[in-house]
Length: 520
Image 1 (cartoon, one colour):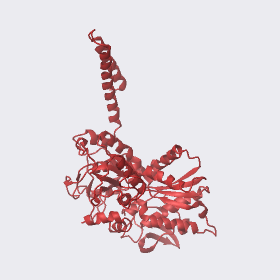
Image 2: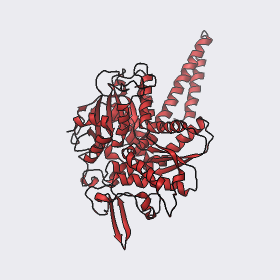
Image 3: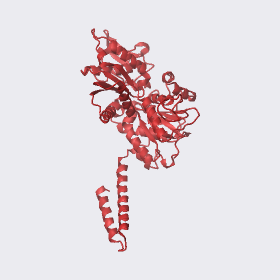
Image 4: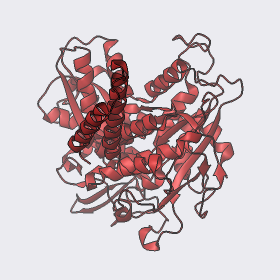
C-alpha cells in the first residue's frame, strides 16, 4: 500500500468516526481519538518504510523466525556489565586493535579521568575475537561488484559475536559450542567499517539490546589531527591513507577527513594521497593467491602486483627505491638478457615496501611540494609491518637518484604513522564507562578467539588444494541465501599459520599470552 492511499484511508476513517460520535462526546475525547488514529497510521507507515530499507541479512535477524540467522533479541541479557567485549576483523590483523585494548592504561580506573594508574583499563574484562579469515580479503568485494555481500558478511560477524553458539569444528552440522554474548562491538577492520557500520548500527538500534558499535575509521582520522595539532597546523601539508582497495573505493576516509576539517573549521589547505594496499593484508594473513612458502619461481595463481605502469603495478624503474628483499624466495622472478621479465612479491615485507613507495612516489609525481606529515594505516593488518614501513621512510629520505635527493623535501621531519588501534581502544573504554558497563572484575583478562573456515560440505571444486575457498567461489556468492559456506571455530594450530603465530608472539605479547594456552 502506498503512503498516499494509506493517508486517504486514514482520513476517511477519521471522518466516519467523528460523524458517528454521540452528541455528548466532548471536544477533548475527539482530540484523543484523532491522535490515536494519526499515531497508529503514522507508525504503520514508518514501519513499512523502515522494513523496506533493511538489507536481507538484517531482515532475517530481526523478523524471519524461520531463518538460521534469526537472532531473537528479546532474550538478550538486560544486564551487560559482565558480558564480553566483541571484536572482529576480516583476519588476524584486528588483533592489533585487541592488543591495544588488552594493554591500555590511559585512565584512572577509579575516577575514569585521563591519566594512567598502572592498572590496565580493561582489567578483568572478557573478550571475544572473530577473524573472518575464510572470507577475506574484504577489500576485494567492492572491486568485483559484491559490496552488498560484504555488508552481509559484516552483519554476520556482528551476529556471531552477539550470539551464544559456535562450531567446535568445521565438520559439525550444527554449532554445539556455547560462548558468552557481548556488550559492545568493535569493528577492527577498516573495510568492514566503511561498508558495514551503518547496517550494524541499524541492526543494533532495532534490536533494543543496548549494544553499541565502534568502527576504526573515525578514530583514525580524529587521532591523525590530534597528533598533528601537537606540533601545530600552520602551513599546508599532506596526509597519506594506505588502506585496502575496498576501503579506498568507499571514500570513507576522504569523507571523514573532510567532515573533520569542516567541523573543526580548519582553513589550512590539506592534501590527501590515497593508496590502495594491493595484496598487503592478504600477504600478512598469508593468503595462497598472494604468498606461497613452497614456490621458488613465478606461479600461475599469483594475484599480487606485476610488472607494469599502473597504480597496482611494479615499476621496474623504481627497483632501487623499493629495495625489495630477494632472499629466501621473498621475491619470485625470471630474467632475460639481464632484465626482469616477471616479478612476484612473496613476503609481507615486500608488499609493505611496494605500497608505501607507491604512495610517496604518487605524491612526488603530483608536483606538490607540501610535506607528507602522516600516513594513516587504514588496515589493521598493516601495523604488523611497522618496522619495515619505518625503514622505508628512512631509506627514502636519504636515497639519491642521479645525485639528487628527490624525496627528502616531501617527507616531513616530524612524519608519523597513525595506527587507529589505540584510539579505537580509548573510544571503547569511554563508551563502556559512560554506560556504566565496565565489568570492574578483579580477575585476570580472558579471551575466546574464533576464526572462520570453509564448510566441509562444500564441493571440492569450490576449494583450493590447501582447503580454502577458491577466488571465484568466494567472490561469486550472492546475498540473502541460507547456505552456510563458512563456520566459526576456535583458534587452533591447524588454522593459524605458524609464521603468523610467531608474528603475534613477537608483536602482540598480551594477545599471545591469552591465545597460546588455548591452542590445540
